Length: 427
Ligand code: FAD
Image 1: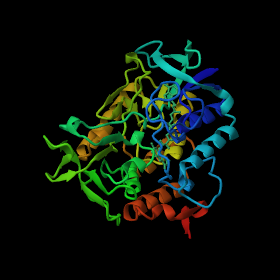
Image 2: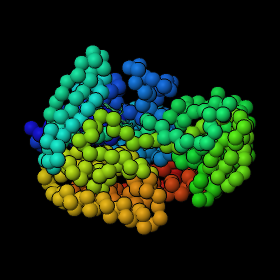
Image 3: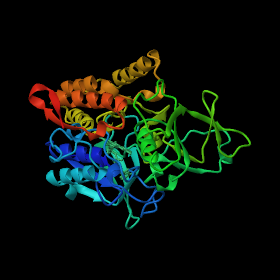
């Protein structure tokens, strides 16, 4: 039997496990450092270290409701339970992942409280290498090593905060947090809060803060202001460049203007990190690009190693599902991958395309509406079923709706109409 190692039992790892179990000739080995499945969706009041003394993994905050309707969020073979709302509380997503694990009998395969410490190619430089994987049992501190033929990295990418360095920030006298540590708005009561970054979390948290804070500055460098009608104490301003020298709480913005705030919340995203990959694995994160990945997924030099969930601005669970099935089609030789040279050339061309289009290199893995043709191509090339087109259609509709009606869009309810590739709004 060919052993497939899986690191992590969040949504991506669970999906990988479900499909490996369903593939003749493959047997999975999966480790999860916590004692539950769900990863990001496992809310914790802890913000610094967890019960094992490790950095807290989840960045979930107490009130969070999904920013995608559950009708598109589901894995293609496992719908969410019918219920009243489309945009659901994070606890319901966690329950859904528990149910997915139960339905496909995944739990008994997962080695909980086991942290993968080191992954090393057995034959460095060989594209057919096996993998030596060292794992620590967190209950006993005992390490074991195992050899696997393939490896799926599904360790999640919303845990290690990315924080820009702002000039003079050490002089700031107010409170500072990253959205990774944000749980609830109480501590911002009556404050003037600068929220730096207006992607999904920045905008969502800024809106929540408006009911507690005196004033919220949503500081961002997006090319256009967010078009929605926003609460009167939320002001969109340009991004922060520095704390004004000699002041304790005046920030200088990119356009030269200034704001005064006594709390700063970084919503500036997360780093890709793979602390367990040895140097010999040859994986590098350069300008937030994970290299060298063929189609954002497969290691060009070592095609028995795949990374699930690197792209962002995607519909995560369906995306993971196609990625996993594509990788397994290559592992079982149902399809033949191009040579290493061709895969490297393909990634070089993707980078070039990004550069030519004027897109910042750090956005190489940003998908947006490109995810739909990307997933169709993966599915066709792997001879696997495509996602239902209605998923993309509803996803894009909600994306636009969020831009135009950020205060309202989560109140809507949707129903998929798969037979006509569409959806309907239910009042
Ligand atoms: P994770 O869920 O992070 O799982 C990774 C797992 O790997 C964890 O359980 C971790 O403990 C384990 N692990 C890590 N390192 C090791 C190791 N060395 N050894 C063993 N185990 C390890 N997506 C949506 O579809 N809809 C939303 O509305 C939505 N909202 C979001 C809101 C927030 C605040 C965030 C942060 C993300 C949101 N997402 C949303 C995206 C979400 O991250 C994905 O849906 C998905 O849960 C990611 O799954 P994952 O398996 O890749 O990573």
